[in-house]
Image (cartoon, rainbow, N blue to C red):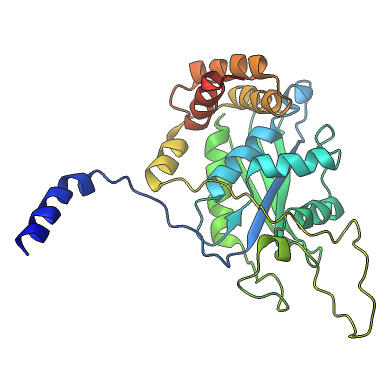
Amino acid sequence: MKRSLMYLIAMVPAMAFVPSVASAPAPGAPVIAVLAFDNNSIGKDAKDFDGIGKGVMDLLITDLASNPKVRVVDRDRVQQILAEQNLTKSGAIDAETAVKVGRLLGACYSIYGGFMRDLAGANVITAHTTSNETGQIENPEKVQSKGDDVMALIAQLSAKLGSDLKLSSCGAARSASATPAQQGTLAVPVAKDAPAPAPTATAVAAPNAEKFALVLPPDQVKKLHEVKLDARTMLLYSRALDADDHKDKAKAVELLRQVVAKAPTFGPANDKLNALTKSGD
């Protein structure tokens, strides 16, 4: 008894320093894939913002992952599928493509949209979901600001999606314990004596080793929201992600250093920069 009491007393200081963690999504929570965001900017500088959607996509994934109502596919996994489908250059995502890619990722819903810099210099982000079972477009969202803080817009969009999303289960034919691979297939009734259908391009099972985005603790989410990230800095971050995706480590490091110089407390850029500079590749 005395030994147990002494053990508990000794553990108190260590327990006091246990970091806070976010609530993990339920195993049966709907799987969401955030896809590419197009550049819909207008005006003479519109082309300057080509590629900014990759950063928007990355940070929306990071932010949404902390919502316990959903499980969000990791960006690297999304990038892999987009590359395999030859969508990394054009970035063009329509409802049909969203369903196809979403099914390959084992996701119930796909989120995609656009970034727009208007003539007055305001930033606008739009987004909506597409059901990968029915193809129905739902949950339209739009956030706009007069200031130049894209991170604030992403936080607003994530909050609106988190509160407004009306997500059903992934089909009555699927069990709550279905794996992401099972959730990535289309449930179609088949007669007992019918031959097994051949897989099609629009109904392909996702890999068993599904990857989900890291769930940040609440304090890290708060720090992320406190970072002011203007559109030009977001563009640098997007280009750094693209360079890393294309295995151009030197360019990615150079761009990430520029981002950190402009936004020293921007955690995702610092983390990626540290990972790249510590790697021996």
